Image (cartoon, rainbow, N blue to C red; front, top):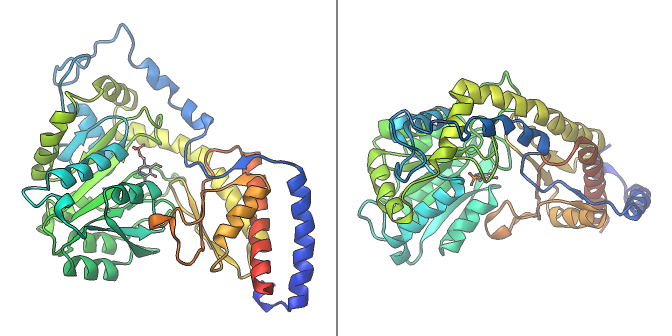
Length: 425
Ligand code: PLP
């Protein structure tokens, strides 16, 4: 029965029962963690064979004949461009393959916009009231980059089709100090939703007042389905922007961080010819060339996009039971109480959980007292500030199944206790 329909006396009875459960759990001095959005060891083991694709006997020439052991190849080797383009669903001529982190590429492009300006426009550091749109809940490291460069972060509400496009269109068409927007179009971090075709069309057809407005299209989870028969290819934003007459408006990113080894994968950015020239124009000062041996290792291991998809199906087999276990426990413990909602994603790394208003931070604090760590409440909002104090990001990938089940039960208990206390007071 919904907590919202119970009398104060019944709420108090329920609370005192749950509090004694809580004391028993505290005595166990647990140390569990559902905050880490990274692959577990079994997932990492899936890629160990990749390390055998290149050894001291290998000929380390790229298809182009370039010796990958040496300097050069600023924008990556052609076969890696093809692989990363196929992952993003775009064309290899639109791609630069970088080093071990797509986040670094995002940072570097914003840093370049700050100091040099984009395609002849005024450097962003000279735009006093520079602003950036941050669909929320979203990825805290995105928000942190733009905060670091002194942008005012403007939250945009998310719904099940992506960011609220009425809000985005209104804002970008009326203010030329809005310089960009963060997007994770597929299995968004943390909601797990996929942007609808209509949302993507509306993005491609934006009419920003700022000529140097850019969409940072972070397709970090482009091949990360957890249901193998679930095909969710989204339209190619690069072609859509081109068709809409906005070829330079978007940078798309991806990496193999959650395919092979986070921190030792390869990354890519895709964009228009003019933007690629612009990127290479600053990249050449930062490096003489990327780690092409690692690019070769990835291409020789996967061979093509079919190889990546077969590999991702193995990740899915590991992740699916974990996501389903969390969902089942949340359902068993919380369904019908009227105090929580959560997403059931088809891919990605997270479940997004909403408490009643004002309950999220206390829930995370109480979990921590019972020995379970969660990402701080609010982290999914610009400045770490969730105005409704509702959203909590659950990351079920890294922990083992036994810990995930126990941690989720404790989480549900914590949600109930905190909500009951709020309802009683
Ligand atoms: N983008 C998103 C949306 C992420 O969730 C993450 C990691 O969690 C990254 C980028 C980091 O990517 P990389 O390892 O390529 O820097």
